[in-house]
Structures are given as structure tokens and as C-alpha cells.
Amino acid sequence: MRILPVGNKLNLGFTLLELIVVLALMGLIMAVAMPALFSAIPGLQTRGAVKELNSVLRYAKATALTSGEDQVVLLDLEHHIFYIAGDDKEYSLPENLEIDIDSVESETLSDQVSGFRFFSDGSSTGGRITLKRDGWHYEINIDWLSGRIEIIDLIEENENY
Image (cartoon, rainbow, N blue to C red; front, top):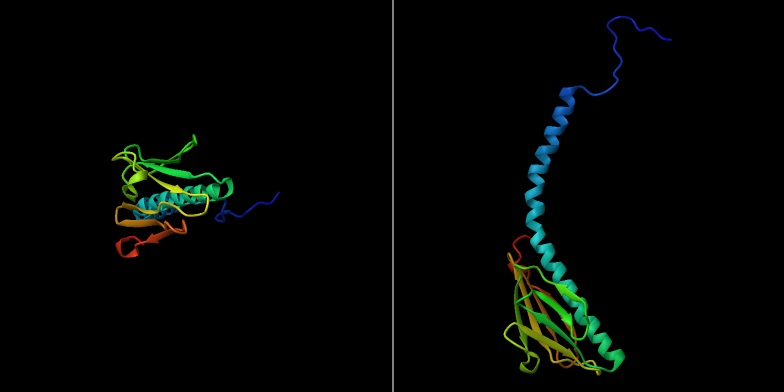
């Protein structure tokens, strides 16, 4: 057993003052970082919706090519969902996302539901889907001749980008 002379102390931990200083610094960092994080969330949600819609459109095109049967992707603006006709799976879109659809009249079922048809030869009815939210603006263009699907990120409107 070791005996220490009086006046020498072992440093066995942190003092209460040190812990309070660390917690105050962490609180200050969180107060600065959180608003920046939350301002990016609408852009991340919008970008995620664009990518998911793009994936479903590409899947429908590939299915039409491989199965030899037309595939239709429908967008329901009232319920903020989209899906492949005949498939039970529905995909949701953020509620406060502004959506504009430019599709051919034959694929417009109502004021709130429009679609895009992909044919077995790779072509499509074509059209455009515009998605906007809090300064974030994307367009998904579908070429009628080739069925090519292209995402256009309109950066000039993205204030947080």
C-alpha cells in the first residue's frame, strides 16, 4: 500500500466545473448546428422523392421492355402518391411538395391523376414532372421517342444548395 504525503492528490476524475464547461460548449455547438441541419431537411426530402420517382419510372420502363407489356406509372396529386398501375405498392410524396404534371391527354385520368405509359419497344407517352419545395426545384423529363428519363436540378432556385 502506498501512502501519499499530505497535500498531494490523485487526479481521479473531472471536476464539476469541467463537466459544466463541456456541457455548455456542446449546447452551444448544437444551437448553431441544428438550424443548419433542419434547413437542409426539405431539400433532402425533395431530393429523395425525386430519386424514388425516378427509380419507379425506370423500373416501369425496364419491365415494359422485358415483359413486352405496357407499364403505366400513375401520380395521384390529391393523395400525394404514385404507383405502377396493377401493382399494389404505393409510394408517398411529401405533403407540402408542389407537383406539376405535363402528360398526354390519353394518360390523364382526372384533374388529380395523370400517368406516363412505357411501351414494350422502349418508347413512352413522354412528359414532364416538376417538383418544388422551399426553393428546391427539380424536373423529371420523359422523352417520348426513346423513353429516356432525365432529372434536371434547377440549381439557380436552390438557395440552400
